[in-house]
Amino acid sequence: MYFHIVFNMERKLREINGSYVITIPKQVCDLYNFKPNDHFSIEPIGNGELRIRKI
Image (cartoon, rainbow, N blue to C red; front, side, top):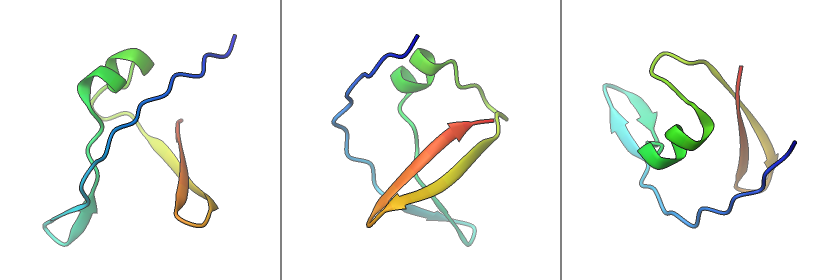
């Protein structure tokens, strides 16, 4: 089963200890069952677009 849920949220790219970070809102993490220490793949899919998948 596939659900398409639209979140129109803006996030700010931040720099922490020499790495760039974009936070994921808690409501999104709760919806997709993302937990601390989960691993994700990040794939470029277009100009300025990324696909993020939990692995």
